[in-house]
Length: 415
Image 1: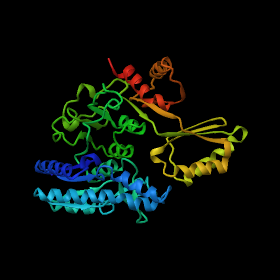
Image 2: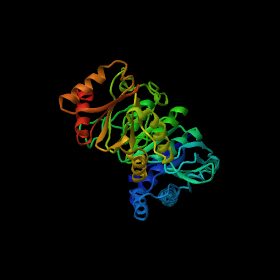
Image 3: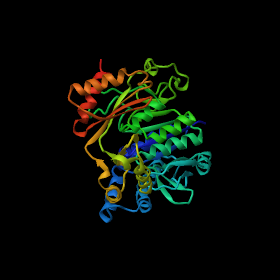
Image 4: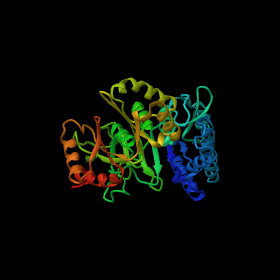
């Protein structure tokens, strides 16, 4: 009997009615003959509400205590969903992240999974039970409760799928897959039938609300196919890319089915446009003291557990892009930067990032030139440009970010 892992996001389990609908879908999967492991997020906006509660007590909550608080949301979801499955005649058992064997490093708020020991999960599957796991959380090797950062339930699901050798991992939400851009910004955005792991990871890193980047790392390492689908959609058929997005190795056929025509794209083709609005740009222009300051700046960032996204150093200048989503002590960071470095280090809070993504996108400079020209023609100045094998990113005025997304989508993805 094959194992299937399903993950349901907060909107899919936002209330009891939706929870019952998820339970029915889980039971349909079980009746198809699969062992089923379900990973759930907290109900609706529970995590945000708990975080807001903490901020009423402290502007900079202790990260360990924050993890103790935030993990309560997923525990509620697992218990309620297990009850709902049992009411439908299923046999279900709920586990926290630690009970299910999710072992992380010793960071709080943004821990990384280092090992999965799914012994209890395997035992319960062998007994014929559906296992419901709290996403977004684990336990460190020091036996401290940890959380995996935003989107961490995706990581839990894919890591568990890899550990169990699952047939596939289904990521269910209120949208039916990954789109060429945010449909709320670009009404003409289209669902993408197939994506490679690399393209998906770059989309996630660039601000697209698709999948957690670390989750894609696990899937790529173990070759686990990911099906991004709507919770309201039917169960996956012979070709899961027909009504969702299939994420797998580039050019790989899904479950022995023939490749779709859109599964293989020419090198350099743009697959999507993503943006991230809430970023800070740290810039150190210290003149002759600049290079000497750089190690001290990076040391401070490590002390405050501030992860960076893009770091550039040229001569005396250092630039680092920081995602606010991963910044939990901004006031303290600002105060420490001012105290230690004065006006030699600035935090710029007026820019956003817009990116185009595709395999081999920088094999020539054609895509970079084309994107730069269309932005410049509309008077959108790029403060900074960064590239990788799969991505071109422009840092621009935040107020024009949506406009830039529409321009680049029209240029690269609309006939």
